[in-house]
Length: 589
Image (cartoon, rainbow, N blue to C red; front, side):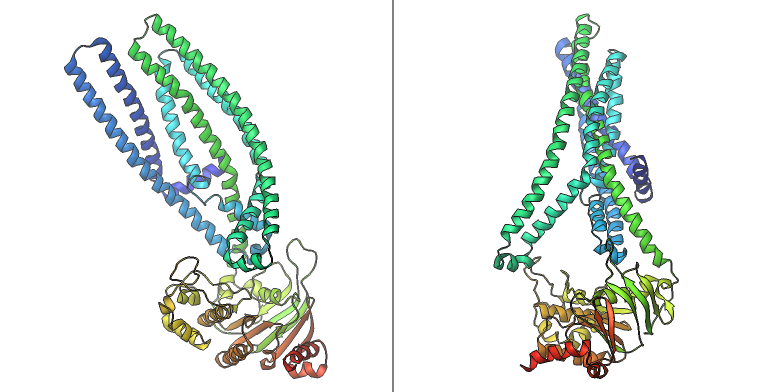
């Protein structure tokens, strides 16, 4: 806890120095407001009992009243300032989190263990009441509690220093008991998160309209309810155990505090009976006794809450640290702007995913000359996409070597290397942005480049008819003015995105899977014409594009089984020839 708290305090000092004096001033004003209210009440009771010097009373009462009003206003104003400063602090941590999510090693985005860590880390920055912002708010509350304890303790010590100590000890003893429940909750947090993550994913499936057709046609409602019921039951079982422990320890805590408070009040009554203090003082003492126990309880509950969030903050820091190290490994490589396509050489490349013993790629060797058009073909699951992901340096943990222009890509800065590629991925994912922003994926948008990209792919007529042209937003689920594109139109939009970037190397992974045969033919003719000076790597199991390629690389179960031109492989009458003739036969029937 101490290390994470120091980390947050340092970050606050670097980002928002004013938060420290604001915390202290806010606490002092809040306590002053409460003490002034007590003294004001004492003044009124004293006047009722004595009924002397009305003019003096009215003057004092007016002064107290104005002081209380001013203190109330200042407390509210300072609360607002503190809240805005703390929220600003959380946003700086949120920016760090999202930056790491977008720059961490791509293979970590496919690692279930790392994804779980990411979910846990997000808890630290996901809302205003818990996580990092919650810790800062609780720190402010602890300062207020401490100032209140000093004030109330000083008042109670006038009765007896022992009474003050008794109240303090009773409060601390109760808190120690509750800490036992906190320790138990921390011990089962990962199990709890496992169930919550699955519940959230299932709710997402149930409410996401993209799954709507499958759920209805395949009557998937039953299995979804069964699965979510299983995870909910497990989650509830865990929470019941936790809440039972809290209930037991809090009952003991309340018992201890009641004994200490009642004992102090009895002692005070005897003091009043012996005329050591007046009735008006009794009111102040009694109120201080009543307030000190909730204040002690509140302070330690705030400390417990900070301790409770310690694991959340720790998860956040571990996620940032572990993924930042991996990001920096290639960022530390030599930065040298590469502006043109060069030869790609792959030697003895093998690859397997984390936590898997089976290799997806096995001892692959081939080369691609700058400007060549190459097709990587094979059945589903043969390793085609994994191979191009390795070529693009999305994975780091591979065996063998990949060279670009004679340089091992390990020695090339990752960001500079990414600039070499205009990929069109197999997953066609549009964002809830405008059409032009989806194409550019950058800001500011170059309108001429967007126009060229949508024209080349044959989307211009469609887009110009939209309500706001290229400025029309996609995804109807967010606004009524937005539009939804068909699967084929989204696929074309993804190519427009790749063309907008216009990098030296294009990687087109199943670029026509959602297009009809005519649209597919037009697509390949357009690509051949517009990308004649580029290196183009097609990844496909549909072989219309292969006749236009200089080289075809055939994969089967993660191994290269054939390499050659279309005609060479047809004449060989091997793996490619059988696949090509089988597909061609369906079109001839």
